[in-house]
Length: 334
Ligand code: NAD
Ligand code: TDX
Image 1 (cartoon, rainbow, N blue to C red):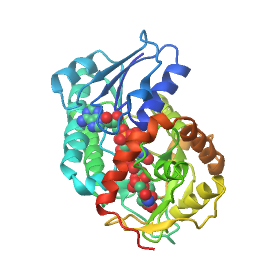
Image 2 (image 1 turned 60 degrees about the horizontal axis):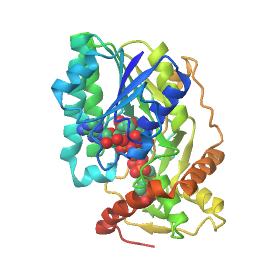
Image 3 (image 1 turned 180 degrees about the vertical axis):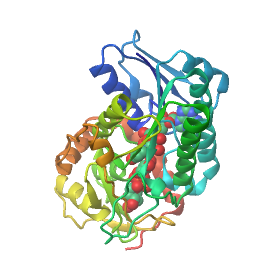
Image 4 (image 1 turned 135 degrees about the vertical axis):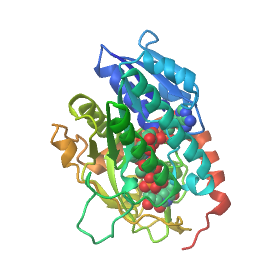
């Protein structure tokens, strides 16, 4: 099976590529990745050149995309601008990659009749109140609140439109917040882990009450394979692992892992329009026979801390550049 993986040099995509090559001897993988600031070449080192190739190019390069898709049996589309805070500073990069890039890919996949899986996010549904018992389902109306989530919502709509109007053989998955090895230090969990490894103090946006529904990246990627193999064309599947936690609780756990007090953090400027809570009802994916393996968040977090501790060369420079960006607008408020 020849698989084209877009964005395979980033966090979730590179874990997907490694896991796929390890567990599926019949698979060969071509990664198409523009190698933006979010990619790390170290994510893809040591892979067998007989079964793996990396092409450094934009997913909007229509001629190359056409050729690559025509040679593939499956396209798994991870490439995106993925960070909410960046989308508040430069929304146009998100429109270019997340919307125009996705349309370039589905055009080619529909033209060549190639199976397509679109990786999306729970953020397309907007947010929930902290005390609302509801969770997102595939029927929840779209209501994105940042330029990032608006661009991902648009990309989902394009995939669905191509299923209906061009016969695209696609499935879509909307997953909750991922954590695990190789996540960029601009994101919440690796930012706090690398801060703690450098002896600093974790930073909570606003009061820290916001809730995210955490899932280990390997569980996400296993669910993606389940949907590719058993999902129904045209359907949307929600992926989550019952991992709801406030940001304050996550930081408390990390502080404890580092032997510090649970309240040893600072509050910093809140994110404008900060979504309060995400929560996934994963019945649509569980019904296909998938089950998360990382059901103990604390031990998944400990494994992740261990990875960052063992790989300082992977994160030192990217952390420094992420912190430079944060320093422009972020202030300690308490
Ligand atoms: P990431 O930012 O770590 O990686 C994105 C990758 O896409 C990078 O390697 C980057 O170089 C590449 N890329 C960006 N623009 C490109 C372009 N124009 N052409 C080719 N490649 C380009 O992101 P991630 O966290 O691994 O997220 C992967 C996917 O999963 C995204 O679609 C994201 O929306 C979705 N998702 C992420 C999460 C999460 O918690 N991180 C949760 C749900 C869904
Ligand atoms: O330093 C921080 N302090 C803090 O309190 C950072 C970087 C974040 N936060 C908060 C904001 C959020 O409530 O932590 C929470 C998680 O923040 P992010 O890691 O930026 O993730 P989020 O905005 O929830 O989006 C993530 O999940 C859905 C991914 O980045 C998206 O790509 C995915 O679609």
